[in-house]
Length: 376
Image (cartoon, rainbow, N blue to C red; front, side):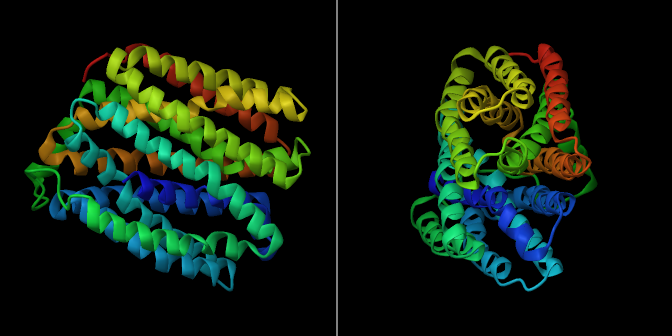
């Protein structure tokens, strides 16, 4: 599962470092580039709910295998797109395909490691950040030497091998019961009542706000470093990789801290660090100053090991995949809009101010976190 998430997330994070090359190929401005990222992540958001329903019905392992296998074809569509319209269509299909992986890995780990689900989920999410650390710089190098299509196309054999591994080594189904064999009115009411629990609702609100920050920050960080801070694209890609390398450490620590201390203290620490980093980023210049600021920005990578573990464990097992899929579709659909907003602000010469806006969203989430309880 960790290997699958390594490629599923890592390949999506290749998009930001390839964005300058894609803009050149198709003649995009920053607003259109932001819209492309929004299309990718909005499709990923929409696919969460059906992905959760399918995981409840046919099994988590099977869905993750299918997601990896179909991703092969979607990447081939992207790299062969001959127009902007086809590029958008292929990107949307890729987002929908990878969405099938998102929910199933959480619930599968929750069932396989019930006493240490925070650590297990944190380690798996850390594997995703390892993919984010390694794949974007490699893709950027390949794109610079050859073409951006090769930088993305190198993921094809990776997904194929992952699908084989999931088929061989991951249980087809880890949950024993399901309440979603048919989506009746009573089932919908049941799901709604569970996700509207006050503790789930508070955590979901925080998740929505910080996911907006995550989408915008990861989507435009390399472009911001190149166009505003004047860094070379290779250097910006390396810093982007360093940013995610921090997540390899931060996410397992966050998950372990959640298992030991509950949700309150670790979450507030992550949000505080993130807010300070976002405020500092527009104010500093120079490579080493940006390196230092990148460290607290990694708080945006660690929070989800807490929020998603909390929400997963707080849902009944018989609707766990569907309930989490509903929550993920909601917060991801809202968060997917933030790259378009930041891209529009950047085109209006308000790139720095966009990061102050993200700091403001983090502050709101930090205030809301005062209402988080230690247990679901």
